[in-house]
Structures are given as structure tokens and as C-alpha cells.
Amino acid sequence: MAVCVAVIGKENSPLYICCVNPEQELGFHYSLHTSLDVIEEKLNNSNKSNDQRDLYLGTLYSTEHQKVFGYVTNTRVKFIIIVDNSNTNLRDNEIRQMFRKIHIAYTNVISNPFYTPGTKISSKQFNSVINSVLGIRD
Image 1 (tube, rainbow, N blue to C red):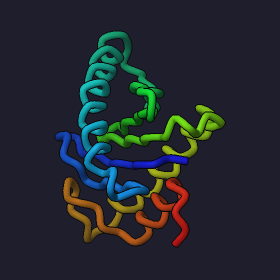
Image 2: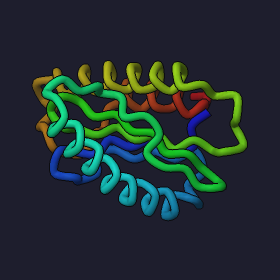
Image 3: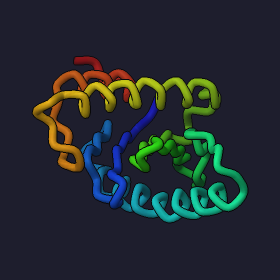
Image 4: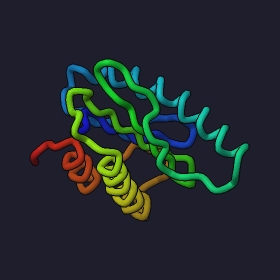
């Protein structure tokens, strides 16, 4: 399962970050901010090649301890999932499913008339979806 999930706004401001282990959160922040550069590079390369781009960016980078996956919405909101490298049986299709689940939950959050776009996400329904992606039991 995933060890950290983040939603980053179009101006690269963190809207939501949740980690399985709060003691490792600072290290995950470093990984998340490092992945933003890779996302921007992939987006710039895809915009030059064609107008039609896939929302799923795939593996952004990999270290000996973790793999970082990325997904970008049409409004340039970024979803990032960090997976522990000890979990080798996780397939690309399962990562795509996680991103779809997060994207649907994010769409439900921004559809709320009381949510101001670009602010931190504090929704119980969104938290429960992220906890299910992380494998945390409520």
C-alpha cells in the first residue's frame, strides 16, 4: 500500500498531505517537493509534443526506499502517491485505480459550495478515501 498521499494545488501549494507514519512526514515532504520538479518537466515535455496528454504520469522517480507516482488533473492540480519499495507486488493498474479514487474524492470536495478552491482540504469523506488508499482502518 501507499505510505503517503498528497494533493498539491496548481500554484504548487500543498492542499492535503497524509502519511501512514507521522514521524516520517518530514522526509515525505522532501520527496513530495522533489517530485514537483519532475512533474513540471513532464508537463512541459508533453505540451510540446501534443495537446492530448494522459493524466497519469507514472513513476516520477524511484529511490532504494520508495517509489513516487504522479497524476495531474486538467486544472493542473497534482496528486502524488509515495509507495514503500518493500511492496513489490503493487502493479501499475492498481496505482491508476488509487489515483482515480483520489480524483473522484477531490471532485466531490471541490463540488461543495462551501469549499474555497486553493485552500487546505478538511473533509471527513476525503479523509476516509485517503485512509482507504493508505490502508488505515478508521
